[in-house]
Length: 345
Ligand SMILES: [Zn+2]
Image (cartoon, rainbow, N blue to C red; front, side, top):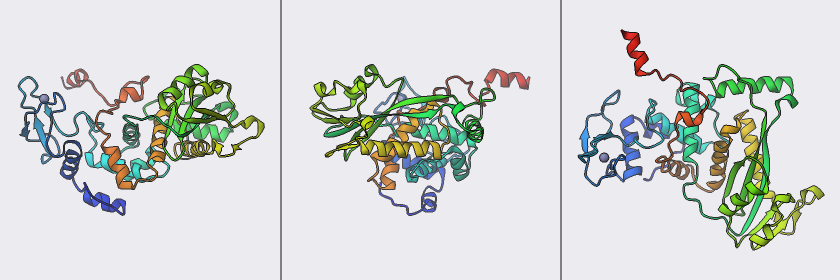
């Protein structure tokens, strides 16, 4: 697929209706030949009339006798089970691809014309598209650093605390009690290949037991690893080709060609984004924000179109349910059929 848009207006003109958006997604997902997402049979599915508001969108039923289930290109993707038009989902994906520091759900809501609660949900599902699906090991010169995000509420000024409570309410509109932001600093590990990609992972603690397996899963043994003087990194020289310690405690920041300047630059972008755009991020969701910023960094040389397509092509198999987003809360606006029927009796 080859297209370029200079403005968001051009994008919206191209994706003018639901049918165009479905056809676009079919090309991306199936190359135009629909495959049943329930059983993946090679048999050609039946084309059926779409139900609901848009009757011209491509709709299918599996022709495999044991399956026979209905589906569209949204089935099994992060766009499944949502009442929001596909056009708005694609718009939101594009907005996310062109933004330099992320979009808050308040902003996204006005841009694509949905409620703030819906925008919050869309934003979180889209972040699930931004995780790497099959990451390779980082190698060469690899910078490793840990940081802490968040802070104690009691140490903040009264106005700051009030602002955080407001932000927490906006981020979690379904919550009516305990809306106070949680006081926590979350440890975050960053691994950055110089001239290459960054990986960011939230941790329960910056201990050796947590750090070493994460480094092992992400860094090639042939690498030169640069860290600060944290005790947990002490034995890295025995595991990797070389280990260089830049001792920040002794005001040492650069040692010849070795430094952790790149990962520190990434931390400042991440922190500015999390604080500046999102104001408050609960530890529970921090990993997804980290993924969003890592994706932006990792695609820094790509064009907007390439970033958008890369995200869309990740839309399948990364579905995030509302329950996973808010494990401690009941699902909003979901009236059970039982209650509904009772009401009409
Ligand atoms: Zn099937």
